[in-house]
Image (cartoon, rainbow, N blue to C red; front, side):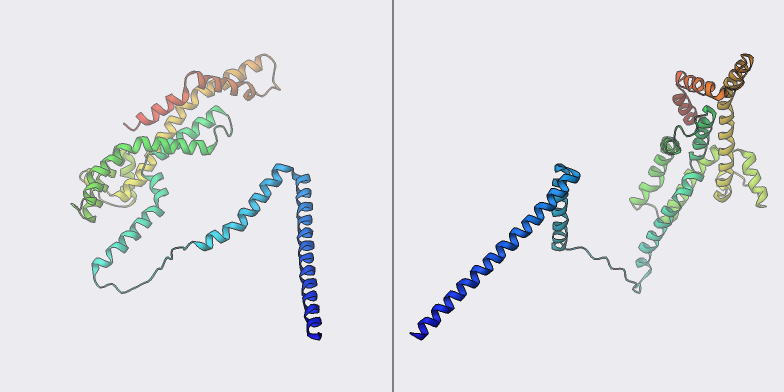
Length: 296
């Protein structure tokens, strides 16, 4: 009888504990739900219902991203230095280093050995001549200069591809022949755009004997001579572009002075007229045609 009473008490206490735990869980759940609802109501009141929905969606995504990322395996990159067993194992490494070096000096090559210098100088002169301060922006001028440089240098790139790169890929020539063929193609373009006086100047400055023909011209002296010639050509074209706009400024200033409107800045009247003239004559098309055709 006593054992039955003890079992009944144990059963009752277990039932009370389960009831209390379930009540506590329900209270905790209701409390967490009420807190969540109150937070969502506050967020909804502050930033609106739609933004509240987007907030909770982004919050759920932020919780899921780490678990998804941890489930995926990431590749490992190992860099090790080992002893080469022969010269053939060193050549690929030297090729990679050479490629990285070329990529590092690519901006200098773009400026010094292509048509970019002349084009960007002329377009900068155009912007200054019109008088529209920062219109077009310098980023647009540089982008247009790069695109026009690609148009001008496309034939040179095609020659490089046909005479040097493709034979090297087909393994019909080695690295030395690749360099010589590339040098001859690039030198032909540079010599065609370089003034003889500028080239002679650098040979005199370096105290080097003049070459007998174009194939013996040093690339080290040819590149700076080419840049000086490009700057000269760009300034000549810029001067010719400035003349009509300066004429408009003079005419407007004379008219305003004759009318007694001395306090009115002439640029307020001349700038719209210069922009109108530039648009009417289709200035951008004319300048683009002149720049590309100037390289022959």
